[in-house]
Image 1: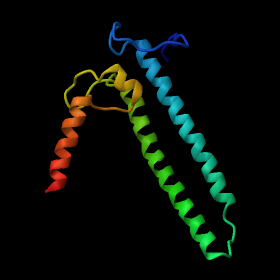
Image 2 (image 1 turned 135 degrees about the vertical axis):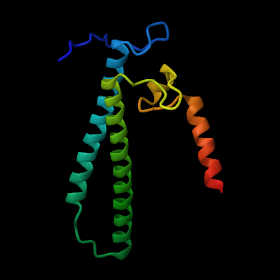
Image 3 (image 1 turned 90 degrees about the vertical axis):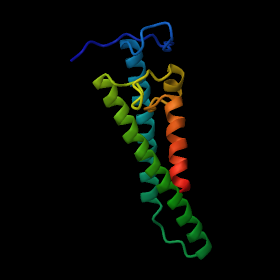
Length: 140
């Protein structure tokens, strides 16, 4: 087991320190784990609400509205489940020493981008190229 990395509470990764040093990796690991914990807690509360809400609603309009709400809630949970998978993948990349580098070019992903979206796997430029290519293929 590796030693705990000290991280001041107000720490933010900076451009003037070595890219993806131990402190930066620990910062992103904690950020990703906190995000995942929030999503899991939300998910648990939704499951509890959905289980409690299995009541018989006689009014057709009310029942339809309830079903629409449930469907929306389940779609949201599905998106969150996919997001948790991406968070887990980012945590694996941290453990494997690949976090912070573009999977297309191998270039470092900007700290600003990673701070805003720690699950990012591409630099902004590579992501834009990827999306343009995807759009071209979709238009065919």
